[in-house]
Amino acid sequence: MSFKYFQVARTLWMSPIACHGLKTFDGCQLENQRYTYRSEILQRVPAQVRFLSIEPLIGRIDHISLDEIHWVIVGGESGPRARPLEPSWVEEIYSKCRASDVPFFFKQWGVQKIELDASYLDDVREMPFAYENRTSSQRSIPITVDLH
Image (cartoon, rainbow, N blue to C red; front, side, top):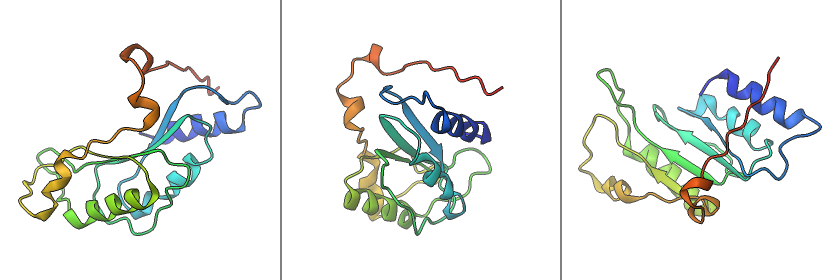
């Protein structure tokens, strides 16, 4: 995800012919508390499903609103220089999702192997309702937005 996403989001949100009614999935990436402002922008974007991609999770996220968020994806960092993922960070987000009735999808721990009590999260692969009931041909709708 990049700044270009926010240009697209702002264009769609401010457009007089915004994507109201389109069956779109729009999301943004958060890595730690510093970037939670992105979710506030996303909450105003018209979409059938708004999701947070919290990966790689490289720091604790204490305060985040899940209002108008329909799905949360969490994962650790991979690769030779991957930073560690604390299980408590994931568990806090998972608890917030449970409290807000938001589907939670856990992708991976990253490079570290978790043999702690948090390993139950390995099998949490929830999907938003709007996605579960679609056929594979309905799962993506290409949208082109001209930013110029």
